[in-house]
Image (cartoon, rainbow, N blue to C red; front, side):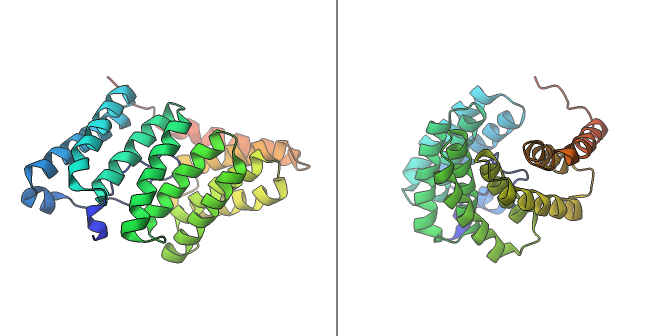
Length: 246
């Protein structure tokens, strides 16, 4: 099966920026079977609900998508995508053990069909690492992130924002472990990549600044934290107010 069967619409909530996974489904939608079209419509509705913060509705839709994808077979990318998406909702609701189980199922499909070094595999590895980190299992999370970092660096180059997102995830693990000297350069590298590619006032830059400042406050470099915090606050203040969801 080609990677085109992997609907790259999985919701990426573990990294700062969504992975570059979108694709034009119009051709397949036009020529697809009724079952395929029904799955895509359910998945699209789930994504819309998720983006608007309607997580219970999103969970119901994504679980329906899992059921709709099952007849496509155990090696179908639509099943992996649906599992990833249910896991994404679980993570934002702090159901990390449930999310981990689903992402591991998706990972098995992706590795079997796409191979161990595909970018979709890297995205799921980062999702798994996020669930492990949230459960305090830093030793389990670290090798997952390291593997994702290698995959993304080889595929995208060291200066890509998705590579920076993997570095950020690794820095978060090291910071949680109190490994300040290991985390600090990763935050600095992430910050530089985002500033270069996204601009100095992007929301992703503010998030890195917040995490970097929190790390510095717990290190001998505490005096440097205030400037980072002030800059992060200024970036957030410059962002447009979010639209209310209904």
